[in-house]
Amino acid sequence: AAKSMRGNQYRLYRDNMDEANDKWLLLETKLHQALKKDLLELHYQPKIDLKTDTIIGMEALLRWYDPELGHIPPDRFIPFAEECGLINDIGVWVLGKACAQAKLWNESHNLRLRVAVNISPIHISTSGFVDMVKGVIAGTGIDPHLLEIEITEMSMLDYTEDLINTINQLRALGITISLDDFGTGYSSLNYLKKFPVDVLKIDRAFVRDIVPEKSGIAMISAMISLAHALNLQVVAEGVEEEAELNVLREHGCEYVQGYYFSKPLSVEDFTNLIVQSFTNSSSY
Ligand code: C2E
Ligand code: MG
Ligand code: MG
Ligand code: MG
Image (tube, rainbow, N blue to C red):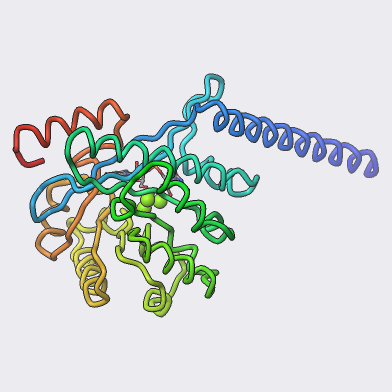
């Protein structure tokens, strides 16, 4: 009996494995097709300058809607894409799309908005990355000073001379480099010193802690001071409440992003936001 039990368990295990494999394959096929058939979409979330209360740029965020599976959030499919090897193609697509869109908005509204693109640590570590970016700049005609690349703190874990080299080359082109989700990764402050970035993006987890927690305020204030001591600009992510905004302002945070101002918007809605914000010469 013991033997047949084990047999059943094995079969069960194998069935589960097959099922998992099938799901994996289905998702991979679907993501591949979504990319090929232009079914992925970018939404854009404004970044606000707290000194002037105006929009200074926007972050491009991927959206994937599949007719059968529904909306699949990037937090789920980006890690998947990194594992199945689609992430580089996705990165190239996002970069091209976002640069072309930024160029169009800036030209048609006479603006200088900077577009930020999230790039996977895996992708940026690929040889040929800088040449690919140069190609996108040439192809779209975007001013590299209006392009920002966000990389997560995670990538600093396996930071190498090569990665620092790549980042220096990108910066030499005029591209801004941001450290995304700061405070949530595993890096030490020593890495931050060595890592040549321009902007520090404080993760939403810390912004959420601001009010009414006193220690939360101390933490944010210390992070902003640290950034400034290292000559970095600061963006706070995920600002939802006016009270959070006030604390950030008070402590000298330069830029914010969050639902308080706007959710990520479709191209059409972001266009309307630009028109509204910049034609009445009213602040944001
Ligand atoms: P992220 O780069 O840190 O982006 C910020 C996330 O916070 C976005 O989630 C945004 O919609 C959300 N957010 C912004 N303001 C608020 C707020 O006030 N409250 C709350 N609760 N959330 C807010 P999203 O779009 O789901 O993206 C999640 C993550 O997926 C991104 O985190 C980024 O790591 C990754 N991702 C998104 N698009 C891309 C992409 O094109 N390429 C790569 N490699 N990763 C991407
Ligand atoms: Mg980001
Ligand atoms: Mg982030
Ligand atoms: Mg994130």
